[in-house]
Amino acid sequence: MNARSKIILPLVAIFVILSGSLAACGTLLAKWGIDSNVLIMANILFFLISLVVFFVQKRALSKVNPNVFLRTVTGGMLAKMFVCIAAIIVYKLVAGSDFSKVSVFAAMILYLLYLVAEVSVISKLNKQKNA
Image (cartoon, rainbow, N blue to C red; front, side, top):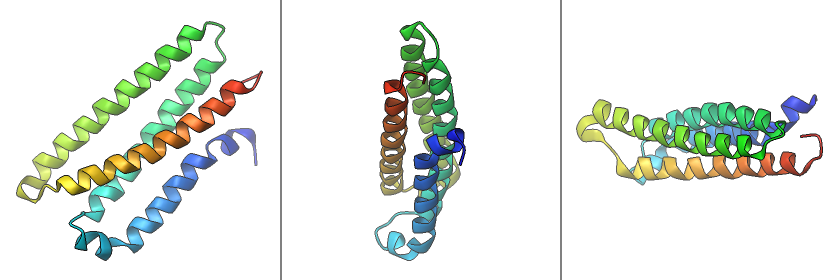
């Protein structure tokens, strides 16, 4: 396994585990009032945006100026926030009266899982001398 695929392994693992779990627990989630399709789409969205932001931050770690990394972290947070807001607005417009607030809050828990994985990996890379 090369170094590039090894560093994204936590994000890929979370994506695979969540995808399988959400597909398997669809009826249980429905009992709780959670739309599993919303969570599956949120899982895909968070995985893709986390990968993009992660690689931008990884590239910024190699810069001499530490402000570059701080700007990319801030920009990544803003990008994720705007993508989440846009996704919620699109979901509200598409779902209409079937909009599920519980599904949106469950999706935010998925966001936190991806955030923890991304921050832990980028922190480990930041501690390395040749990040």
